Amino acid sequence: MKPETVTLIERPYQEIVDDILTAIVGGVVNEPILFDIKRDLYPLSEPAQDIRSITGKVNSQQHTFLKEIDFLFNVGSNAVEWDSKGTLPDDNSTFYVDYIRPTSRSPLTDINVGSVTRTLSEAIGREISTVYQQINLAYKSGFIDTAGGRSLELVVSILGLTRKTKEFAVGLATFFRDANSSGNVTIPEGTLLSTAKGEIFFETTQPRTLQQGQVRIDAPIRATDDFKGEDGKVAAGAINQISQPLAGISRVTNFDATFLGTADETDAELRLRAKAALRALGKATLAALQRVVLEGSGKVTEVWDPAAPPDHRSEVGTVILLIEAEPERFASLNSAVQETRAAGVQATLVSRYVFFKPRIFVTHSPALTAAGKLKVAEDIKNELQAYVDELGSGAAAEGEKLLQTIKGVDDVSDAKIVDVVVWKSDLGKPAGESLVDTLVTAVQGTSTDETALRTALAAALATTPPLVPTSTRIPDRSLLQSLDGQPATDAQIETGEFQIVAQVDGADGWVVLDLNSEADIVLQEQES
Image 1 (cartoon, rainbow, N blue to C red):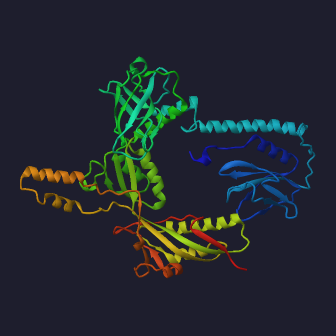
Image 2 (spheres, rainbow, N blue to C red; image 1 turned 90 degrees about the horizontal axis):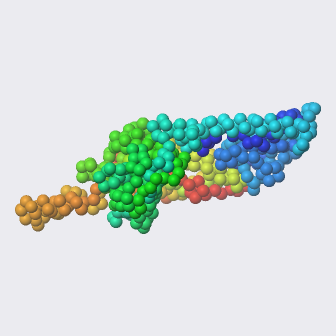
Image 3 (cartoon, rainbow, N blue to C red; image 1 turned 135 degrees about the vertical axis):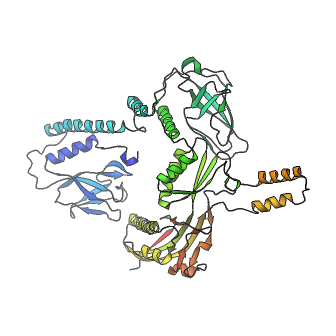
């Protein structure tokens, strides 16, 4: 679920009552007005005597704004006047205004606390608010992240899962870091453990992260469905096998005996187990990873994994996919791969991307508000992103069109690009001598004895690092060129006579904009 869809319909009780009272006295209810952060004043469609309330969205959440703090009623302009120091609606969102008409002829005018009109309105509003709450509860009960209790049990039953009760043995398993590993090591929920000969199985019920420098960590475990009751009770030290090897973990044990649980499985634990079951449905195979990339409109061109030939072999517990996909699809593809990968396997997604960061100097119209200046910078970023998104594989980003795009933004009177920083994706180019050179060096000076040759070659192959890509960037100024293919000068950059070439190691790639609207765009007011 997305943040904006967590709640189907949200109408707070007080907001409903205010709308009812405003309608009863002949006012205007929920007049929609589009908020633009560049403006302070928003005229109303009809003459108003006063504003009763304003509601809208703040950080995508429903919000009721406060009169005299967030906004004022500008009588002379018959308009809503927002205070820049108060809370403002989200930019480009709609806010809703309730106000009283000065010519209202409603026979009901007393809406003070305790009046018959207000008491009846509050009673009706309470019932309407309760209906909204019930609608939301029914809506949330259909999703694994928001359902609870019996509703959650019905949702996960689709996967064949039932809530584990206190009849299942529980305990703690201690995971130890591999001495050769570094960085954080994540132990997912649902990691399967067993006794030495696999007689009894357990699974972790919560995720744990072994931090950099930490050598061991405890994780709660529970007996699996086949080992209910007394069958799940084992002695200390009996659990010492990990069914699926975890990168960065050398061994596991339980320092204390397992015992029958004292409480049923919680909603949070059941959710984690259900999500682990969903990931397992994909089998977490290399074919499954390639499938999710294909389903996301991407294409896998090369794969590095531990079972591949030497030139495409990665470390144990890792897999690397080189894909061809538009930059805007990359985040969703990476998310899908991470959800599908096997527990404990580090999956890395890379693509042939050329990243560029322009440094821009902009002159804008006078009298813009502080928020308006930020909006101009954000509009520049969005327009540049739209231009880059239209470029296909191998298409260069042209400096002249970048400048035209910037100058085409509202309230921009002039602009120039003062510098461009360029990187490319690291696709694992060999560092140092090639594999052939390494083998030649290894056999030089070795006798013709077959055993000695085998030993030398084995040692060379064992010590030669795999030539694998990484998810890092490599600075490459050579991709910033003039229109004739030569390195671009500072003067050519300022006049837009340059291009960012979409080539990564001799193959077509995609240009990607890396721009921070606040740090990389300098705004200056036009002199009057």
